[in-house]
Length: 134
Image (tube, rainbow, N blue to C red):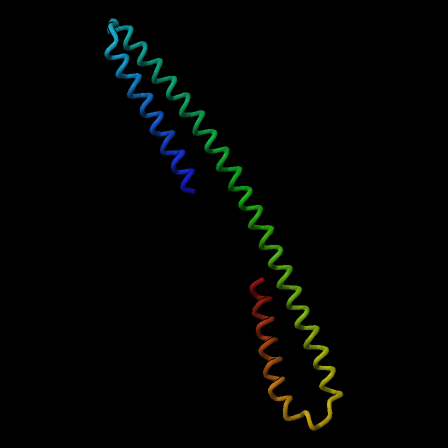
């Protein structure tokens, strides 16, 4: 980003220096007033055309970069959404298989089920939260 600003500053400085130098040279040149005015008009027209060309190039480059950034961000968001969906499905699959195992467990494990239920509820709420984000 800093290099872009340095380049811009350099370009503006170069253009301003060119204009100032041209005007100074024309004013100090031994020419008639009519010739100086003509040269000044031509120089101003040339500077205007160059400015339009540079502005067009900057605009084109900025548009291209903005499209690339937008495309990259869109792709990253899509990948993140897919990954979150995979994680959610994995957690749901894990919870489902854990729920099936609870039915097979003996009554001695019933005291531990309270803690596991809380964990399952926490996991479920987190998976719903992830799903709502995506």
